[in-house]
Length: 383
Image (tube, rainbow, N blue to C red):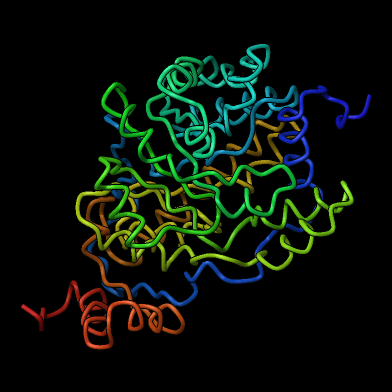
């Protein structure tokens, strides 16, 4: 039987289509994540031993072997049980975190809960993050639905994904967002775990972070532009369904958003927020840059999807371990002995990212910020 007949439920069918499109089609943005405009200062005299470097970190009161999150991908369709099981086992065995895809399918159809609950079974000790859509909160979901999502996977935090771009170009998209913060206000104090506000590929701005923090949401997954475009994903769905208007919109907004590096700089300018950097981060050097700029965790998704879909646990673990080696090597070359020390290292900002900072914060303030970031370990000329 074709996988496209895997369940008749509309939400379940959509989740399966998302998996297959990501596996089979080009859904990458054509714009850069911005990390190519950032340079770490090579340290010719590291004064540390590479084998003594620690990549361990704490997040949500748990210790991780290194600051990697397998970002939200799937759930709610039968093939997702295998994918999530592989990803969760890899997270458990390598000591990293994992997030599940939107749990809406299982909220609407409890028979699909097993496609998510497999995660906690395979990863009893890992950080596991749940996932509910902002439109569902805005329209009808309340405390009981969020609690069900949390209990389904014994989550350490629950992500509320703000996917306005995807919903706007999706054939059956929900675009009612006006009540989401008001409704979250009524829920947040009842929860025993944090809410993470998550973008899905279009990035967060400083103003977004300030607004979220004013509503006591201080964990933010910036989900910037530069990796998978969910507008692109919806182009293929609209094309299949013969919806030419949505196909046109999806193509037009394929590269819409704030590049990840820029989003990270914007959000890190807000005090007392905990940042997960995601969106087109594909190697340990970009991970290192994100951590230097203030991220506490780095989220990566698509590179893990194909091996998990193939049931290849060893391939998923290999990719994770390679990222750890890449990060460790980068830390050695800039003289960082642990994750906390990364935030003291110099980072040189050039090109379009520098132009954006000057435009957003004013030429003088922008130049001051750029210079401060580039001279952390040199004489502090601004002190």
